[in-house]
Length: 116
Image (cartoon, rainbow, N blue to C red):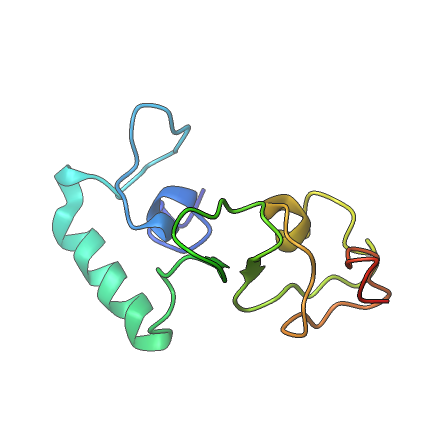
């Protein structure tokens, strides 16, 4: 609401695209009309975190692998504390990938049974 879609909270902004007709934004500045503001916000975000606009889920196999394959993984890992990584707010679970050594979750249950 207060970010005007110029923070990583906005899915469109974090994906590197402008907000469109499908968004339900309020006072949005992530569009062509406010290109200068958008460019400044992108540069500021990249100064703080150079990897900010890179995808969080990566393929470990070939190019034909889909995101939900066992070869996909979360680059930065999740930080779940109480969900056991079995709820939609776990980034790994939401993307359909198993938690990995990158994750800092507690009491994780989103792991491959073969690894146990």
